[in-house]
Image 1 (cartoon, one colour):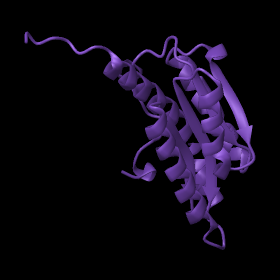
Image 2 (cartoon, helix red, strand yellow; image 1 turned 90 degrees about the vertical axis):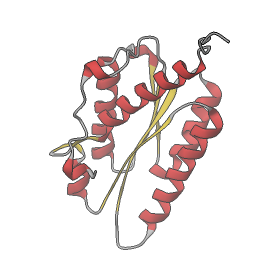
Image 3 (cartoon, helix red, strand yellow; image 1 turned 45 degrees about the horizontal axis):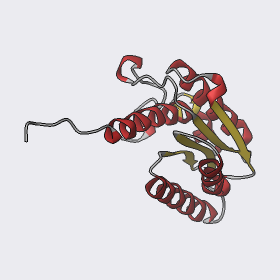
Image 4 (cartoon, helix red, strand yellow; image 1 turned 30 degrees about the vertical axis):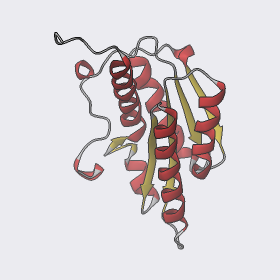
Length: 171
């Protein structure tokens, strides 16, 4: 379902696991800062609402969306973290640069998540124009930052539950 058919900010608090004692890092792009600041604020507010302490949320800024996978890798290497949320915004331009950036970032984030055994969340808004980005960063379609925070908490809870010892079924 596309974001134009669903509000990115809608979630049921009762359906979300507690994020108490989770440590979440956020890498955010400074390119398209009007958009990414809204994504960041939405993510931080939601994490706190879900139980993450403000001091357990660390934010690093990078120049552009392309740099998000490297920042996530650095955060996972040098910090104790349960998940990294990557927030950025790529708006289609006159060339195909957006295709190359979006592919590279999506592949980089996916690869990091798989090899690190930690959730690395793709919170990148990819749009045809600035208005669509505004609509997805707190506008009529909600906020991708909120959606990314909820995703991070759910994936950390999943990872923690999967690591607990399996219960014996009698043999």
